[in-house]
Structures are given as C-alpha cells and as structure tokens.
Length: 107
Image (cartoon, rainbow, N blue to C red):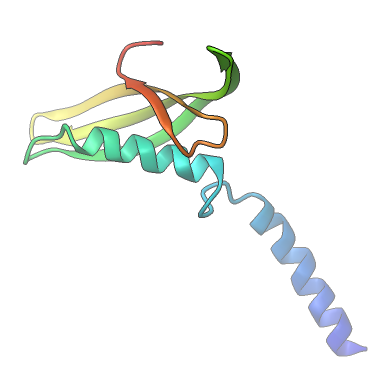
C-alpha cells in the first residue's frame, strides 16, 4: 500500500509539470522555435547572437485553400553594440512541417 501511495503522489506532482511543457520535441511550439531560430541565425553577423523571446501569437488561417499556421515570434539580437528587439512573422503548414513565408514585416 505504501508503494502505491508513493507512486500516486509522484504522479500527481509530475502530471502538472509535464502538462505545462510546451517546448517538447515535436510540438508545434518546438517546430516554430526551430524554424524561427534557423531563419534568424542565417542572417547574423560574427559578433551577434540570437536570444529567444516567445511566440506572441499563433493562429490558424486558410490561405489559397490551404490550412496554415501563422505565428509571430519575438526575439533579441545581442551584440557588442547593444540589444535589438525584433519580431519575426511566419506562415507555416498546418502542422508546422513546412515554411511558406518568413519575414520581419507583418504578413
């Protein structure tokens, strides 16, 4: 009986923690972060690096008859000259497997 109560207690503690994780491998949030990071890092100079911010908005839209995911991502470019705060606008496939558009200007 003690073992059962111990396992039940551990499960009740772990479930809310695991349920709050949004950056897990394979989730839409994880895919959006991966795409955004790859897009931003390809344009960085040698003395710059990216600091991840957050996904501000994630919507589902229909564009040209296709179901798409639209995401706005906040990030910071850190360099010796200071920090620059930016927003990246992404249009992805419904499951965030393909990138249709990525821009620093609102879509």
